[in-house]
Image (cartoon, rainbow, N blue to C red; front, side, top):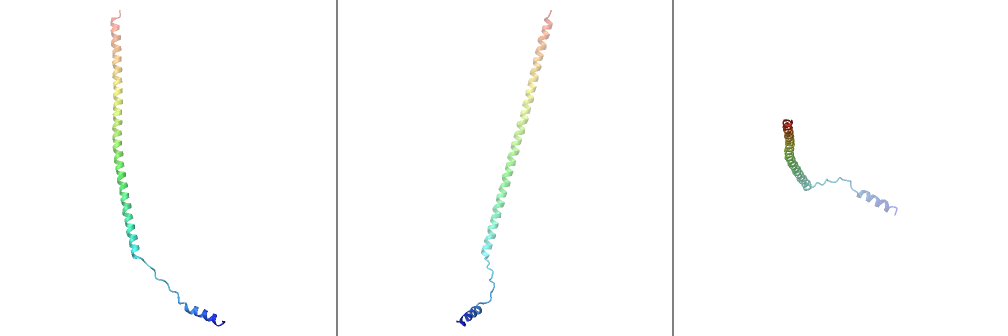
Length: 111
């Protein structure tokens, strides 16, 4: 028994080989698929960015049209306001002229 245990230990010690490094495993199809997926993602993101730019340009165009319409309405509003002022001035001049004519007639008929 004393002889058996060291013999088993010696066999186990000699039975183990030297440690060797394992070769790295590379999957080229996985790398290629990853590159393809990345390029598809970039194409999709660039398409999305282009769509956003086009939408922004359309929004700018709509804003400019609305601003032009608003400016035209503001000009018409100012024109109408000025026309009302002119109308009121002419009516006031008519009233003053009427008062003047009536009072002048009264003065002429006054003994």
